[in-house]
Length: 397
Image (cartoon, rainbow, N blue to C red):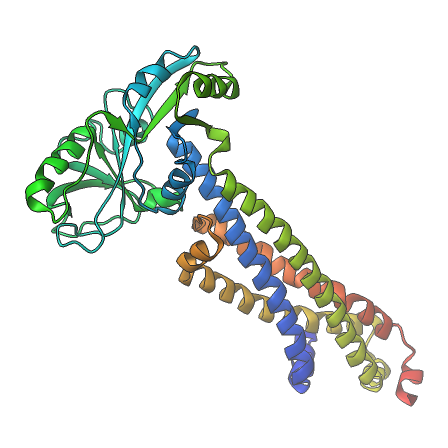
């Protein structure tokens, strides 16, 4: 009888022990992989959103910081305004290389004039823009024309192949940007000219016209000269331009980053406790099983089985249980993340980007190694102890 045949036979003969060890391996692998996918996905999402924004400083009206973060991070539609003159004032601050205004809008909720509901819309100035055009050129070398829009990763046409109706205005969806896991994936980007045209049409085509004040903007994106300190420039903007709050790019999504740090600490403690308890519980189960099987293993030794064979057979049982339990736990973790992604985002209040197939494969491998290592460590001492016993003494007990 081969080593693994013996291991399978012993596992089948003790369903309770096998189930307990497999469940422990399942819990360790599933919890570790689920936590890794969520936390790494959130961190990657926040970093991609900051990089995609492409500004050193974002200037918004006082009191609008939370609204902006919610819009960019979770796609919650927001509208806020400040005087357009702030653009010129910010541009005069020493160290500022470029400024570009943006206007934040939202579709109507449940209105027939909008084929999408509660969507965040960003209008930008193509003449001064330095954040959207760089990644837009990868797909559209000529930029956006009147009536053309770019959608986030989850935006799709609702009328024909490329049409989306907004305030009664049919825009042409040209392409989609790469996913970030944030509210940018549920946003629509177009030029200021298109925004004004939508506002003009909305007075006759929409149940509620789109308000677009000519002398107002929502935010000013700031690009600094090389070597300029963003923090000092932000302080100068705050002091020089009344009624605004400059947000450094490094400080964007601070509430989400703090929440993510708190989650990381909590999950780390829970994962550590789960691992320690699993090792202790599996070790106890294997010790009890080894004591129960002393006579059986003594007979094997008397029939010619070496200490090494006994030792390896016990570890083979442990590894088979770890492999089965860990694999099933990993399957459950991946399934939960993919099926309940939106629920996870809403419950934790953080963005979340699903990993690439390559990254997912590596994380699955790490989860499986953790499960195997946990069970191996827990079963090692009982296996060593029982394999070293004297067969004659074991058979008499």
